[in-house]
Length: 210
Image 1 (spheres, rainbow, N blue to C red):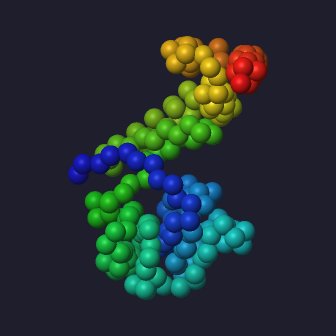
Image 2: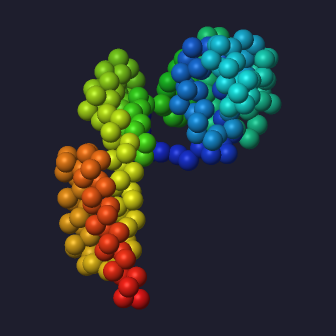
């Protein structure tokens, strides 16, 4: 199987989760804040799923899956411990639907990689099913390497880039600024604030000339 990494905007997308156990909870944990329309179909559910339903983050239908439940699904996550239900769910998926099959990965067409997120920074790790334990270990290593300070650092890089766009300095000078901001010293808040002040002054010079 040939796979490529891809990031998808999930806001407003309909996602059907068949199953309400531990695996379904784990898959949902990465989607509850995505803005997707999340529907869980399962007679029973993990306490976390019930809590998300109570909070209005998802909709849990306490019933067995029926083929009609898959209509208009953008994505389906199939995560029950019943092979017959899993097979029925895969068969019911719309032809253009993204399908994640937890019990038989090759039967689906998408996989959820191990994921590290620090604000605007997203790092995904996949072994294509060869070793989920290795993917987990690499994720833990990345979490240590890219700690919480990177969340603010990415916000700084974004704001700095937007400010540079509004200045009149040459393009090569803008690129030099951006390369310089990759130095580890800019992980420090004081360095970030000083640079943003400098860029705002440059931007204001442009306004004075207009």
